Image (cartoon, rainbow, N blue to C red):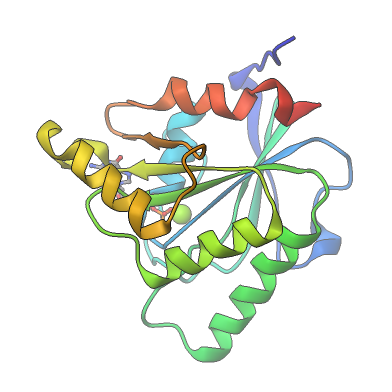
Length: 200
Ligand SMILES: Nc1nc2c(ncn2[C@@H]2O[C@H](COP(=O)(O)OP(=O)(O)O)[C@@H](O)[C@H]2O)c(=O)[nH]1
Ligand SMILES: [Mg+2]
């Protein structure tokens, strides 16, 4: 049976900077990762039919916290800090790595990772590394190519195959193209998230 969610009952719950601040229950979690500015907050808002639930960052890359959004007490959307922002110091970078590595390796409630890349560009070395981590951790994941509305239709196929090749995605890993502006890809991503196996 597929999970029914009341999206009107979606709300920000808590910000965490360490594991003892994560929600203390066993509601399953879907986690979003990607470079700063890739469109993560916009995608979370689009998925939840909200304009401002997840903040669309004014200072990209500065937020090194994990935000938990509670959806109808049935799922959490977990917003991990964006990576690859050029102007952060080495110590900030290692703090960031600890924060997300700890979450991704240890969090039992984590059912699926949604990894975002910008459809307009080849994945960066940070994206490639992130993807390698996900594979090593044996997490279930899906790749979302954001900002679909920013490229002409005629380029979509070529952009998706570049992303697939650069990340060396296995054939069975999906790439969903998505636009927070037009909401294209929204239904497909919900399908993927609510796939029965994610909630067994
Ligand atoms: N045209 C377009 N712009 C987008 C899309 N998603 C995000 N943006 C813009 O990209 C910028 C970064 O978005 P944000 O959601 O804050 O990225 P985050 O840093 O990954 O959370 C903002 O100016 C957004 O309005 C999209 O699908 N289409
Ligand atoms: Mg954001």
